[in-house]
Amino acid sequence: MLLLLILPLVVVIIEEQKIWNVKQESIYSENPPKPPNITSEMPDLQKPNASQEGETTQNQKQVSCWRDMLNPPRRGEDHTILQALFSPDMVILFFATICGLGGSLTVVNNLDLHG
Image (tube, rainbow, N blue to C red):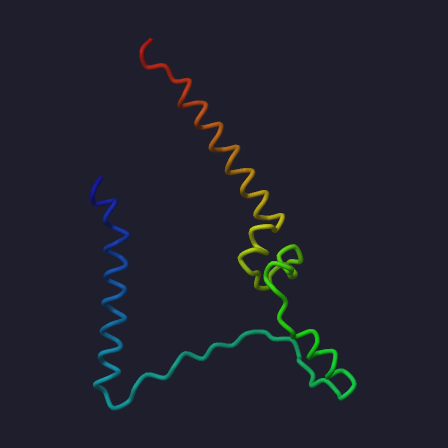
């Protein structure tokens, strides 16, 4: 049982050792490894013309996190912590967790080992 508990820690240590060895080799070698080439799909961002520059600077102003917490971005975009906490997905997840914990607590409470 202890082996199963320790196994994830062993995997992490082995992977960290591999990363450390690669870094040491790159430090002492003449040709350091090239950084990985990461490509992602980005929409075409057109340069705004002069009439739209005022609009874009107004849209780029930072809004307080307290005022923006009930206006989450579209699904798939980055949320702030407060936006994530008050999103419908988090409320559903919280409700399902509470129901699951309450049901399991009831079952454990009703188990009568004395007879």
